[in-house]
Amino acid sequence: MSDSVKYLLPEDRIPKTWYNIAADLPQPLPPPLHPGTGKPIGPDDLSPIFPMALIGQEVSAEREIEIPRPVREIYKLWRPAPLFRARRLEKALDTPARIFYKYEGVSPPGSHKPNTAVPQAFYNKEAGIKKLSTETGAGQWGSSLAFAGQLFGLEVKVYMVKVSYNQKPYRRALMETYGATCIASPSTETDAGKAILAQHPDSPGSLGIAISEAVEVAAKNPDTNYSLGSVLNHVLIHQSVIGIEAIEQMEMAGFWPDVVIGCAGGGSNFAGLAFPFLGKKLREKKSVRVIASEPAACPTLTRGKYAYDFGDTGHLTPLVKMHTLGSTFIPPSFHAGGLRYHGMAPMVSHLKELGLIEARAVRQLPCFEAAVQFARTEGIVPAPESTHAIRVAVDEALRCKAEGKAQTILFNLSGHGHFDMQAYTDYFAGKLEDRDYDEAELQAALAALPQVA
Image (cartoon, rainbow, N blue to C red; front, top):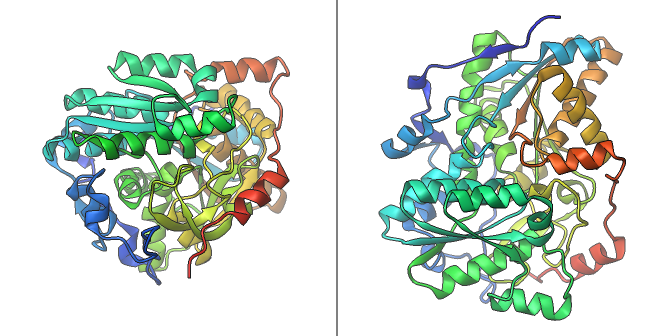
């Protein structure tokens, strides 16, 4: 049995700049709107919860944004991240396809999330902020911001979606080990949390609710800013280090991907890998199919409406145009907690509307089936979120087999599943099930979308 092949870049090949796809768009991204006036928001509207450096990146149209030296020095703890060719998986599938994956689980918290947590902590520290508040679903983002906050001497408070808080105690323990405070959301600490509990005492929580709690804390405390792990443009920009490195590594391997795949909840790891490749397509006409893989139980891109909506359940955020299931929609409780978000990154949504990316919804059980096959061939146990990318990569490889095509497939393995083993225990015990969203609840949430002229 042939070994998988690893492609490594030297430390001095860590990117010096992030990539901003806004510079290459054929049509500009619709602007965020103030919920009160309906007019585009300005920097002053965001300054109560974000430092100006991040606000500048959020609205930037510059193709390249310099990565500060202190951030690059911390990146050296795990970057450049390896790229593998999955020869053992190829053999098991008996496919002519070449399968590559970029592995982001080598970071200290075990996922791609520190790629943005570190610069966000850096810019907040530079702005004189003492504390950060945030939300987390599966815990990958919360543990990453806890890690970054500790490096820069910032206090971090994490509101963790209650169902994940209970499902993933070791992620919670990791956050606390890094020095953060972790609170189950909805909580009684905030007005937003109290309002939800008053209506739904047994609420499992959602990312939209947790965002409301974290934003409220930041807005009410001058020494505290809010930090978001996905969705916003500056987050996607920071994650571009994944794709920038992957382009160079694919050149080392001697192949250009025909298909690029990433799991998508808010859009951060998907954009991180895909956007630099899409930039090559937009600027140099290099052909590539890009597929966002999402959970069928929370099918934002495949089932949501492209409309202006709030990013949180408590309606504390600006209105952004995105694929949304409605800000009041609460997905069923499945194990990929990082993908249980009602909306999709505006930039990812915009690219879907432009026809530059595809979206595919996959169910939980087939995802875990693919994850187990991947673990038994490649040796890495994937995070539940990453299983969605693996499922689609396997499906594409089987398509190549059926069509007799030797295409090249690249996917992002966004994190390991070492803190998510209960999901695998449940899978092997036959306790894991495919959960369906409530169609009536979805329609009610969509009916309540804000009316924007």
